[in-house]
Amino acid sequence: MFLRRIARPLMAKVKETTGIVGLDVVPNAREVLISLYTKTLKEIQTVPEDEGYRKAVESFTRHRLKVCEEEPDWEIIEKRLGCGQVEELIEEAKDELTLLSKLNEWNPWGVDDDYECEVIENDAPVPKHIPLHRPGPLPEEFYKTMEAIASEPVNEPVITDGGDSKSTKQDAA
Image (cartoon, rainbow, N blue to C red; front, side, top):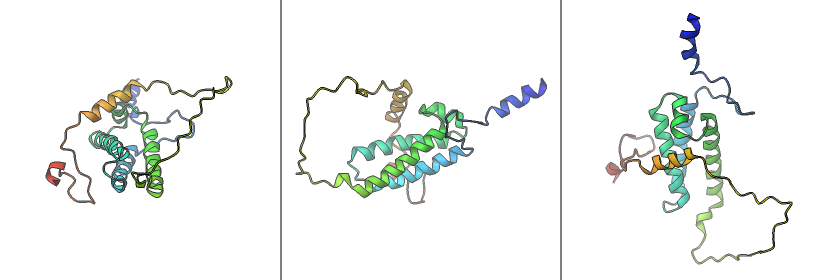
């Protein structure tokens, strides 16, 4: 009885399984996330500043990096971000880096302003046996995360090539 009272809170911090088939527990998930988010913020610099993709990726990646740097506990990171388990966040961050490298290869923002593409409209009805695949509503945690991102102060840390990370946007100007 005594051991249960003492050991249970200590063991509660150790994640034994994600509960998701094929997704193993990452014991140093916080450090992995910080590394991936830092790399993403460096890689996104290759995308033009006025692109919406860059703005979105920088915004949510900075927010997630900030939470990971502030919180040492994976449970609190998961709760504050509200976007799944830390192992899922690691997979998302890896996927974002993969997409970013593909986008840099494809250069979709390099299209001339006067380029016109042909739009083909097809009003044929979808057969009843084919599902329409309409996405369901987003979880409430998503909206909370977006509100947190939008309410961040303007003086955020600037990610540099290894220089002083405590400088702010205002200092950089």
